[in-house]
Image (cartoon, rainbow, N blue to C red; front, side, top):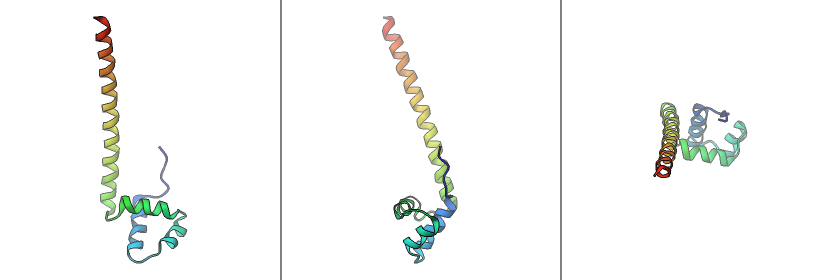
Length: 88
């Protein structure tokens, strides 16, 4: 997985700076990001605190693990069905 350049704390700090009246162009220039990246961050992290963002990241990783586990089990189930259907 690609390592993120900015932490949730830095992203939330930038969003709060914008909410306090900072200009998007100035924030983006200082961080070295595009305005599209900033608006993507804002859509994902707006209204969150740092601890909530960490919890969101944990839930997303847990969700990914569960989806992978489900896909493996479904694949295994299909393989077993194929084996049983060929024997008869």
